[in-house]
Image 1 (cartoon, rainbow, N blue to C red):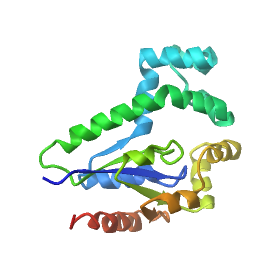
Image 2 (image 1 turned 45 degrees about the vertical axis):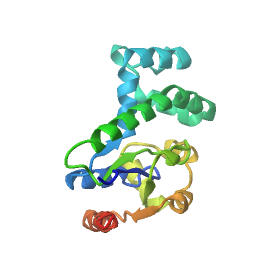
Image 3 (image 1 turned 135 degrees about the vertical axis):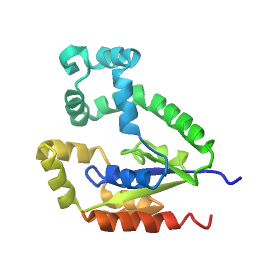
Length: 201
C-alpha cells in the first residue's frame, strides 16, 4: 500500500487558496483549512481564557466571545503580539492537523494525497512537516482589489502583507505553483493538471 502524501497549500492573502481547496474537495481530495481550526480553538474555553489573559478583555465581542476582527487588528499591527498568539495556538493546531491527516490516510480507499491550507506555512516553518508545498499565486494588484471588496481597508491589507513572505518568495520556495488569474474554469484546469502529476505515483 502506497503512503498518502501530505501536501501543504499556501499563497498570499487574497490569492484564492480557499477556491483551490473547494475545487480539490469537489474532486474527492481530503482538505483542511487551519484557519477553521484556529476559529474552533478561539471558541474553546481553555484557549479563550488564555487569549483573554494575554490580550485583555478588549478583544471580546458580544456574548463574551472573541471578536476575530479586533484580535486580527491587534496582532497584525504588532509583530510581538502576533508571535504571542502563534505560540498559544500553533502547537495545538499542528497537533490536530497531524491527527486529521492520520485519520484521512487510514480510510478506504486510501487517498493518494491530503491537502492542508496554512496561510503562514513558510513563515511558521511548517513546510518541513509536509511532503510538498503547493502555492496559489496572483498579482499584488488583483489580490488587493479582492480584499478591498471583502471589506478590508488598504492599511489593514498592507499590515497583513507585512506579516507574510512576498508572493514571489513563496513561489520560489514552493514545489508547485498554480496561477489564479480570476477565471474559475482556468483555475480548475490548472488544478487538474497539477493532480495528474500524482497519477503515476
